[in-house]
Image (cartoon, rainbow, N blue to C red; front, side):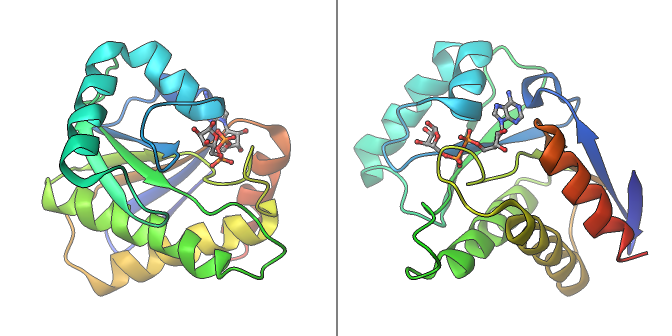
Length: 181
Ligand code: AR6
């Protein structure tokens, strides 16, 4: 499934994000930047220790990564050139500005990627696993943030992928994107 916003192709695919053929892969990290489970664990496992070494240098410099912000490292052994680590909010029944914080993740990641002239980038479904953000709302925020960024900026992007891992997220993204066409 694919749509175009300005000259940027936006694709929804179902695969393991560590296999993505993009310049940059986005990681749903935690504030420690030291790795964890879910997609974070998969990226660190597949990318090797170079990613963790750079994450530790960022920790030394700025003490981790706050929720909603993003940092960039090498992609180590992955095919991608970069990994952007962003920290999604833990779902707290909508009582802790989780929606704004999730939007910040997408906007700050796109802004950072654009600064590095990245042309293709793959996003996982941030916060919808261990952090329990409701999947449909998270998809709407992800897609609307992306549109807002592309429409509001002259960007380097040619191709942006939403990489879904579970079938439920894939169906939700296809339906939400179709609703825009
Ligand atoms: N490729 C693509 N998507 C994946 C993969 C993969 N290999 N593995 C899982 N997903 P989660 P969060 C999907 O839990 O909710 C970590 O411990 C998964 O199906 O990885 O943001 C961090 O260190 C789900 O839809 O991230 C943090 O502590 C999505 O990725 C915490 O989990 C996000 O699920 C972050 O929680």
